[in-house]
Each structure stands twice: as structure tokens, then as C-alpha cells.
Amino acid sequence: MAEIKIPKATAKRLPIYYRYLNILHDAEKNRVSSTELSEAVKVDSATIRRDFSYFGALGKRGYGYDVDTLLKFFKKILNQDKLTNVALIGVGNLGNALLNFNFHQNSNVRISAAFDIRPDLANTVQSGVPIYPMSELRKQLEDQQIKIVILTVPESVAQNVTDDAVAGGVVGILNFTPLRVSVPTNVRVQNVDLTNELQTLIYFLDHYNDNEEN
Amino acid sequence: MAEIKIPKATAKRLPIYYRYLNILHDAEKNRVSSTELSEAVKVDSATIRRDFSYFGALGKRGYGYDVDTLLKFFKKILNQDKLTNVALIGVGNLGNALLNFNFHQNSNVRISAAFDIRPDLANTVQSGVPIYPMSELRKQLEDQQIKIVILTVPESVAQNVTDDAVAGGVVGILNFTPLRVSVPTNVRVQNVDLTNELQTLIYFLDHYNDNEEN
DNA sequence: CTCGTTTTGTGAAATAATTTTCAATAAAAA
DNA sequence: TTTTTATTGAAAATTATTTCACAAAACGAG
Image (tube, each protein chain N blue to C red):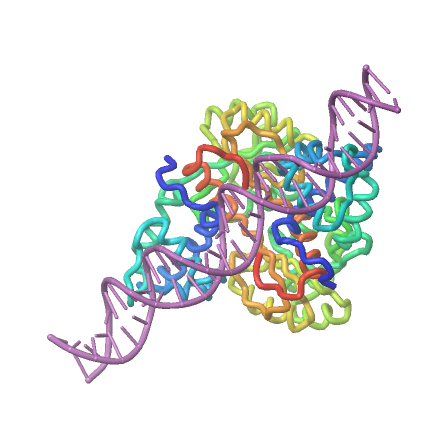
């Protein structure tokens, strides 16, 4: 892997582009300009052109970009041409919502296993997903070859569970706990901290009057 | 407001610092160094010192930072010395989870009103929060002086609901829908896009081997 | 087939963020 | 008291990202 090394800021925008390209495709539009895209995804058109250009000359001058070409390209780049199975660890309040959250609608990702400590949940099926007891975490991750987990456990056990998951071969963690977990360098953690997001929003509202972007 | 204009990247880290300072405070630690903080929050120590220095000389050379001083300072900066009421719009799958999510545990934020289109939900109380019908959105936001909303409605109505909320005086939106909503320049939108986060994670896993940071 | 218009792709400039480095200072040890 | 060690704060260097602005290319109308 790692053929093309594009800026991280660009990488984070790719899913946004991908999603809108799907919308255009469904609307049977076959061309789009960076300006039009810009309005929809709220990213400066020059930034979009620059982003796309890291992958080569994808557009045509005086015309724009061919929706299907771009779509196919991004589908591959984002690994959306294959199904990615992920596990959910912690079927509490938020975990449950994520079980029902239709990741599969917009992306080729599916929660194929879940884990919880509560005995009444273990060995049941919730929203079509089998729930395993925590004790089987490592084994199931290994057996099912799951490399990515969504972490929605209480903060107090987050590090232990993470260590377990990593021992089971996990290399990507979508971390909903407020704890900044420690992982080996080959493991990537993407933090989603809801309290944080709210506090940041409040900070910006109080201290900035111009609310351009993120 | 807007007395001090610090970099956005710094602003986004403030809640992380704040949270860990609270932990130190609860553990009755009274001093902390940038190095120690660095390990806990996974931010380079030089970045932390630089971040803090935007607010003046908060530490002491050869000593570190006084936990309580810093804590008080950040509490004020982040507006955590006052209660912030927010509204939740859309009590579906995710909305329900957020109703039960204890924002108040880690931050001085409370969901004080919620809205939903479903008639059976309107005028009930869920998890201690009154649910109003959508038709009352604007009026209630105005009456209750709510300036911040959490948006967890279906994408198809996201723009309309946003327009309504803005008409009701909202200036901050925590947007969980995948739609990049359009708002006047005085309104700030903080997007939390779960599908996106997962796709970004997958992208990084496939294309980067060194997984240092975000 | 020509010409005006559109729109990309990209150097160069501007802006933003991180990291290095080290003098200054405080605390602890000798 | 003096020396050593720890640690900040800030200047400077570096790296990353965005934006400007325009030549070059391609389209489409006539």
C-alpha cells in the first residue's frame, strides 16, 4: 500500500467528496465542476482542484470532472469496492445507537460483531448483529479477521479493552471514549469526542465573530 | 468577546487539556509539567507550551504549571463556569443515545429541550428532557433563549430544520447529518460525520504505515 | 473551423501549525 | 551558598495547508 502519499488534510476530505459524487451519480448527472462541488461540500474550489490533482489529472479543462470516472476512482481509493467488517465494543447507550446506525447505507462498512460485558446481552443478536461476551474479544477478532473496532465502552476500561483488541490484531480504532488510549505505532486511533466537539463549538461562538470554517 | 484570537488548532485542543486538568485536580495533584500532560493527552509537549503561551505566561520555569490555576483559567475560557443549555433536534436512533449521553458529567452542558416530528413523542418527557413537536421549534428556541442545537434529523430535512433553527436565533450547530448545511456567516457548524470518520480511518490504514497522529 | 468562454492544473505567495532550540529561571541537591 | 537539574517561554526554523491568479487546454456555438 501507501503508493501515493497525499496530505492528511486532503485525506480527511475524500469521504466528503465521495459522498457527494454518489449523490450526483444517483441524480444521473455526468459532469461536475470544482465550483459546483465547492458549494455542495463547502470546501474552496481551489482546494478541491488541488486535492484532486494529487491523484493526477482527473478533470478536463473547460469541461470539469466526469462524475462516473471520479466516483470509480474514489471508490477504489477509499476501499469502498470491498465490504469492510468492523466490530463494536460496548453495546451501551451509544453503542446501541451505532448498531442501528446504517453505516452500510452510505458506505461499504458493516458491523459484523459486537461485544459487551453484560451477561444478559452476551450470545444474543441485536439489530442483526451477534453479541459476544467480552471474554471472547480477542479470540473472535482473530477468528473473524476483524481489523477495525468502534470503541464505546466506559472510559475506565477503555485502555484495557484497547490492549485486548490490539492483541487480537486490530489496527484501527474509532474511539468514542474521552480517553486518549495508548497504542503501538502501527495502530491508528480516530477520536470522536462528543463533549469535546460541543466545548469547541462553544469556544468558537464565544471567541470568534467570523465563523468561516472548521 | 473575541479578546484573544488564538489558532483554531489550539482551540480544538483546549477541551482535551481541560478534561485532563480536571482529572489531575480530582487526584489532588497540584503541579504538572508539559511533558506529563503530553503523555496523557497525546499532544507534543512543545505544542502544549505553545498553546498555553497564547494566553500568557501560565507556568513557572523549572517548576511546571499549577493545576488549579490552569484549571480555573480554562474553565473560564471554555465557558464551563456557566451552564449552557442546548436543544436536541431529532429524537431518533442517535438522538436518543445523545439524550442519555451524560454531557453534564464532563462539561457544563445540558440538553434542556428536544424536538421530534413523531406525534407520539411530542409532549412527552424522555430521559428527563421535554420533547416538543417540530412545529414549535422556532418558538421554543426563542422563548428558551437556546443558541446551540444538536442536529440528529434525517438528511432530507436537515436544511429546512437548520433554517428554522437559525430563524429561532441559533448560532451554533453540532451537525450529525452528512449534509453540509448552509448557514449565515454568523452561525457556526461543527460537523460530526460518523461514516466519514470510519472512511477516513480506513483510508489511513490502507495508505499510511506510520500512524503517528491525526 | 474559428473564436469566445469555461474550467482545469499548478507555480508562487500567503497563511497556519508544528517543532527545534536555547536562554532564563526555579527548585532541588550538594 | 553553589551547583545541578528541570522546565518554561519565545524566537526561529521547518513543515503543512490554503489561496491566488493565470496560462493552457478543451468545449461549444455559430
